[in-house]
Image (cartoon, rainbow, N blue to C red; front, side, top):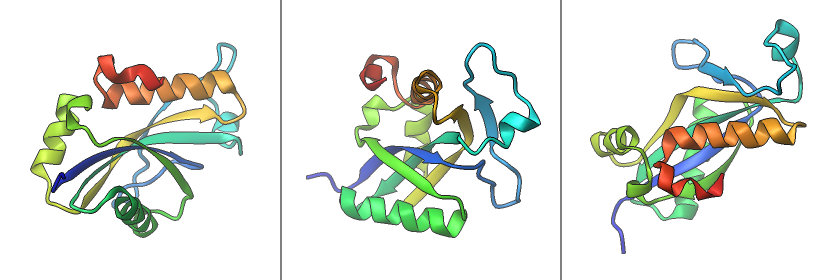
Length: 145
């Protein structure tokens, strides 16, 4: 049995999170061909944002998920849905593995880059998911895209 788990989650929220300094996370939009980034688009209630969540913990997955939920509640008022992607460090990109190696146990990291998409567009959702998971995982493990 593993004594330390390195978990990777894909989170989805209904707004752009802000860091501890009140600055919005960086956003990349996945839009269908005819859409343009505008203030009207940014105010669309169907806009969602994917983000990467990293966790280093000694807890099992169930308790790890509870820790992520509690950490998010203390970090942001936005709603958060997330799915567990993997706990195999060798499936993560090198920079994410190094980040997890350097942090203390019981750490949750919300990566400050998000991918925006319209939740009603299946094409945008699929592309946004592919884009963010390609940043977090090695290309040979991108079978879930």
